[in-house]
Image (cartoon, rainbow, N blue to C red):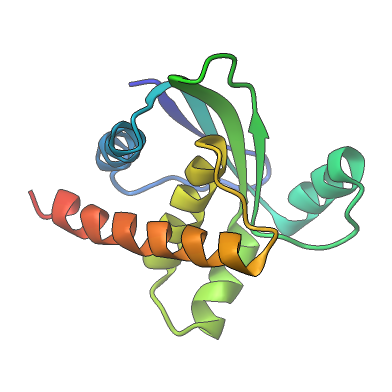
Length: 145
């Protein structure tokens, strides 16, 4: 599978079922008429992601996900998706959803960015949220196989 999962030190985070996540993310890409060439998910702390946000995007704020797109052809996607486990935990509490569900949302959000979706305008945000919800439903189906 061309989907990889890493954890930045000192965080020692691991997905409970990485093979299901790999297959699900590949299915999402295929549903969008794309193929994953290589995508790495890097789980990290707020501190680590904040440093990336300042260094590469000049944003001095906390965020849950940052995506670096290395895609070279329209039919394949390649990139890194950095996810703050601290933010995911806090968002899960704020929105009263299970941690794993919030993590799935952030993971698919990053993949959707690699697929070309934006979230800067209200219309873009609505489209992104609709896609997230659609693909979250497919994860539920996927994980019950």
